[in-house]
Image 1 (spheres, one colour):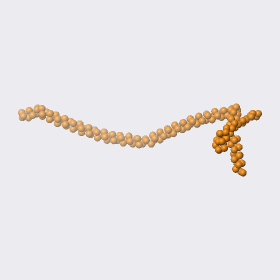
Image 2 (cartoon, rainbow, N blue to C red):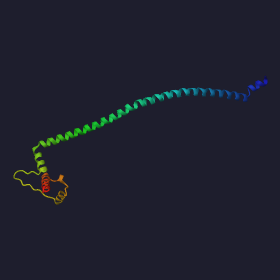
Image 3 (cartoon, rainbow, N blue to C red):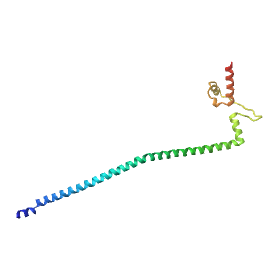
Image 4 (tube, rainbow, N blue to C red):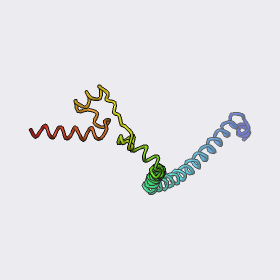
Length: 158
């Protein structure tokens, strides 16, 4: 028995015993971690499934919401542009209500003259060449276009 007691208290025996105890503790803690991990993995998988389901379920309504907001913003822009255009047209209408402005525009656009005035039309040689080539009808006075139309129809009858 004396040999056993000596072995029992020897350093090698104590180290061996400590190693076995440590190995047992490590094994138990690993087993607990693995058990804990497996529970978390199942929970994590369920959570991931729920999150994916929510994302899929909400993706279409969110996309519709975003597209409708963009459409509303576009319509509001068009509405603002239409308001600006209405204001411009009101200003133009108010200007045309003024007799002096109307007279000025009639004189400028239609080349009218007041009784007793003499009207002059200065002919640009380049414009004459253009009109003969059939170009620039929009830039000539209206009566020149009418007269050219009469001349062309008269020439085609002969």
